[in-house]
Amino acid sequence: MLKNGLLLGLFALLCTGLVAVVNTFTFEKIKQQEKIELARVLHQIVPDEIHDNELTAHCILLHSVEFLGSNDALPAYIATKNDKGVAIAIEAIAPDGYNGNIRIIIGISDTGEVLGVRTLAHQETPGLGDKIELKKSDWVRSFDGLFLLSDKDKRWNVKKDGGDIDQFTGATITPRAYVKAVKNAVSFFNANKAQLLSTPANCEVAK
Image (tube, rainbow, N blue to C red; front, side, top):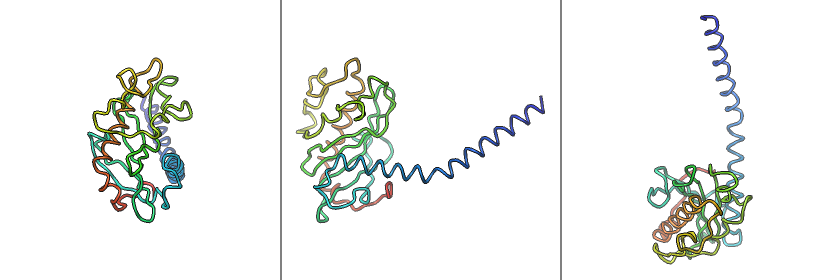
């Protein structure tokens, strides 16, 4: 038994060491791929023609449990034209998805128009909740061009709750949570627009 225990311990030690070595050699590559993917998504939700800066170079950190859905500070990216803030891409969390947190990013113009929304990470049910992915469905495009008139704007609900946004057949929890998260992020921007668009870069999330 002692011999078997020692062999098992040695095997576990070797496996741990191997994982550590792999992580060391792949860490930078993974980070680089994340930067590339982030830049790709930002270009989708904030049109290139409205700004003249590199979005990932102007990162700021925001914190609001109530409106952004997380206890942690989340990044946002400011689009500028001639050094004036013209749009923002805000990361937010929908904490009440069917299978947990849904991480999203919302592009919003300085007029409050939603320019685009994309899903960054989720664990929703394949075939139902995963329709929040653009590669699975155009549903996220439902937000394009929307304005939030007030926090009581009833259009910002799924149709089952009296709003204008479709839910998925057989799945209401996921789109309901998603709509709420986008609405909260837009509300946060509308209440803090001038301050947000003039905030100097203060994080290095994507540099």
